[in-house]
Image (cartoon, rainbow, N blue to C red):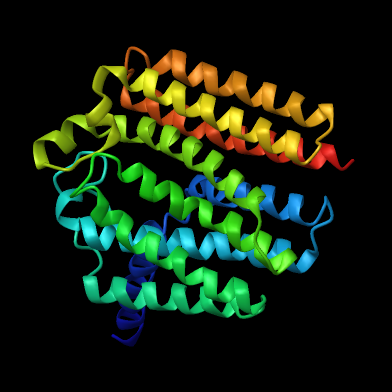
Length: 296
């Protein structure tokens, strides 16, 4: 009897852990990378190509914690909607594998850990970090009131740029905000591709998104946003007197972006859209290599 009870307890704990892992998207870290890459762009530029091991570790850990916390906040706000959408109906809260109270505990743990991380940075960065929390909190509700919730997500995914700059320089300047604007365009673009996967379901349940707003012209809107992204990064390169290797990196990134725009013109199947969305990991990596190459 004791062995049976012990096995049941282990099975229960394993199921809970699996649900927690699914809640924070532990096996799907592309979101963390998309949050981290722009932060590293800023970190490298602010430190002139020599970021400290401390900053690299803290911002990498912070990206994981805040992206995980963002997933929890999103699922808590959307669990009723998620249950009606084919792609999201198996998420732990939508499928009632975890309760809202359990999710709240997980969120508190993640945010507490994120706060500890920020406490290792300077006072300016600590104060600025609360803005990141604000944008992460309001994003899940933005889709209820605006067709452009992707802009709110873009700011949330860009705030690490500001934090990285302030952590190194202990001040702010035009450059990190220029990177933020560039990243805002990029994020809005690739999240529109992501939103295309759920467009039909979102229309049925009354959720707004850029994919619904732009409709069949989504490819044109995404293309314009990607073009602005490249122009802003090129402008940054001119201001920072970047080497030709930086612009070569931007050119390579533009090929990945152009491929996405061409492919979404006919709004392909969900699996293809998801692959196009994930292709942006390579865009972020290529731009990161461009920043690094400038200081090689």
